[in-house]
Image (cartoon, rainbow, N blue to C red):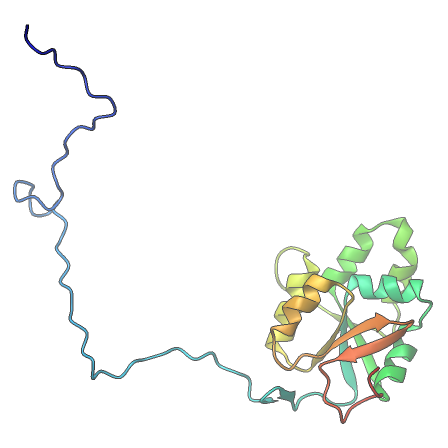
Length: 197
């Protein structure tokens, strides 16, 4: 008895290669010529540009009066700890401090509703400087990171761990946070402000 031909499963139709000579020249894919690398050639490497205000990690633009960007949770936690924001900032840095609030942070506090109306009243304090935002959306973390990267003259006040982690990757930006019922500062040059604990 003769052998039966069984149908092959999952067999694909044979396609003609796009580099084949039988295809018209305009439809044919061009063969790429590989250039041999010259070992004596100078290698070009992209180096990120650092702002001129930085002397290694030391930020020369920082100085009194300090402009401090305030995050939503920083206001909430300072209310819980019963701390006056402006006064506590001055106690921490021994200099005049101007707390700054972006439109995104304001929008975030307004979204929180009636429970956080005290935080909203504090944010609308005339001592706080309002910074307008031009970008789309109201995600405060991205807004603060972008602003701090562009202008190195700010200190960032936050209690948010993820935001702190993101800011630590940017050189020359000090972080203010709350610990032991007082404001503390991290990554600030030792010549400025109160002694660290």
